[in-house]
Length: 445
Ligand SMILES: Cc1ncc(COP(=O)(O)O)c(C=O)c1O
Image (tube, rainbow, N blue to C red):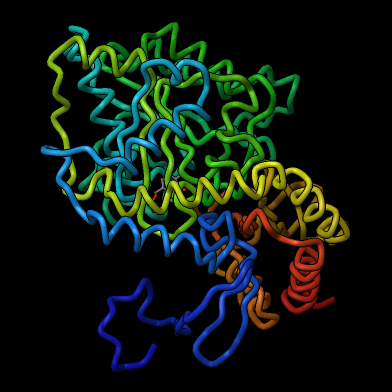
């Protein structure tokens, strides 16, 4: 970090190269160094870096009308993108669903918490306000989003500021919180929602929020067949709204437009961010199902909420241009075959004594490193394994997304791999080679 920097960095003790250009799956720094973006930064970039037509579409929109406040106007790019997102969504969104655009994922989470609350007010259930979530989850960095998050490390410094509305067990087969094995477990982790709802002042619960595939916190932990359908059924049983946080897993990353479609689940709201504009503009959204939108339309009419930059014309123009690109290059169709190539390239790693699990769905993959493969015992936190793997991959110019804490919030090391959907077989091989060499460096025999 140059001492002349005026930026408040993520970490004052870390040096950050200056990114000056992007090309495909590569980011180029000011010193000419080229980095292979194996994590799509933070599972953001789907269509590739450096697609010039996205910038042109944004410039064109900006030259027409760059800003119009949503209290006075709607704009064509926002209307268009809303219709496109609803058309991709499960059936309960398609006729009468609505989209609330934000500037990112955390704002989408905040918006959904308030939408759930006001939906119940509109429906005459004034006691419902708590949003139940899961331990070992992440829903964003603003205070409402952190309240529902179950990411121990990210919550810790701010505990006094956070509401506690209740967290149930995560769905994490590799480190099952009930020490059970699927399918004999009968998805006990889903039934934790039932157990919670039968006690705990459940009449005050407004919604249950979950990441269909838990991204950064658990390293791409996908649920077993039946989990998502079971929580949907339980939400229905207890008159709780179901919010699917697809900020990371949505917009094609798992091979379906939204991960919940893998299991034919119809949530009441779907949150998107990251891939919705593939990093070309700050954009997020809450997809609101027809039933919820209808309660507002037939009730007070006005949602007591708002951001100056919601539904921003230039950001939504970027979203449309990204969508055009996804469609014209059929990029959703590339996810499953590209994921297979990446998994095949990674498969030799699986025999390494310290690679515990390679998991995920589509191009949202996690690699977990363990001390003892037979017991899944993690390394001590102080060993900083995930960060060491990241640094070793960086020596080969490959960017990964490391996290600690998947086991208990403190121990457990994994990296996330979530490259652009355009990743080639040769680039998959480069990622695997960098990881092989990182394993050799971090775990010398
Ligand atoms: C599942 C999930 N929800 C919400 C967020 C917050 O999104 P943002 O960082 O855009 O505010 C993230 C970010 O990583 C996420 O992965």
